[in-house]
Image (cartoon, rainbow over all chains, first blue to last red; front, side, top):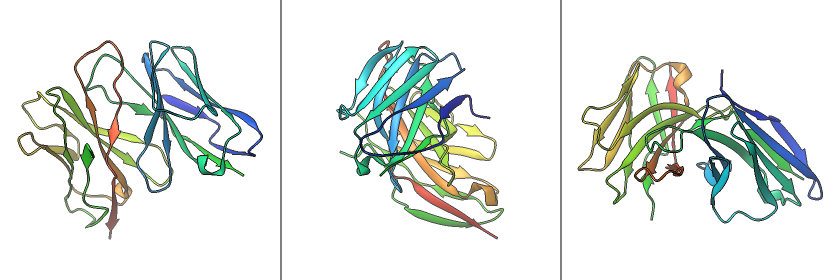
Length: 114
Length: 118
C-alpha cells in the first residue's frame, strides 16, 4: 500500500478546462514534489515544496500552478493545457534535510489533454 | 551534461538467474545519494535501494544489492534469483548536496527495461 495517494488516477480534459491533481502523504514528510513523465522517458522534475514553501520551479509554464495548503497536501492546478502536456504526473514526498532520504512516490495521475 | 547514465535500454534474464543493471553517474559534490527505482507498466515508482556516498559497505535489500564503485562512479543494481514479477523499467537516480535546510531534487537516468523470461 502506497503512503502517497494521488487522485484522480486518470483524467481527460479539454484545452479550455480547469482541473486539479491532488496528492496526500501520511509519512510526516516536509518536502513534496511534482514530476512529469512522458511515455518511455524518465520523470522530469516540475516543482519542489519544502516546509510548505515553493523551493524549486524548473521553469514550468504558468498553465501549471502548484499549491501546498499544508504539510500533507499538494495540488497541481491545470488551466489551458496543450495536447503535449498529456503525461503521467507523479507526486512524491521526502524528508527535506537528508540527502540520502529516498523520495516516496504516489501511483500517478495519467492525464490526457484533448 | 548527463548526470546519470544507463547504457542498457533493454535486458533479458531467465527466471531464477541473476542480472546486473548498469549505472554510472557524474558529480563533483562529495555528498550524494544514489537510488534505484522500479516502475512496472502500471506506472507506480517503487523505491528499491539506496547508497550514500560515504557508505563503506555496499547496500543490500533482500534480492537487491548495489555494487558501488566510487572511484569508477558506478552504482550497478544486482537482482538475484529473478522472478517474473521483476519485469519492469528500472531507473537509477541521484540526489546531490550537503544539508542545506531545503530539499534537493532527484535526477533520473533514462532507464533499463528488464524482461524476465521462463
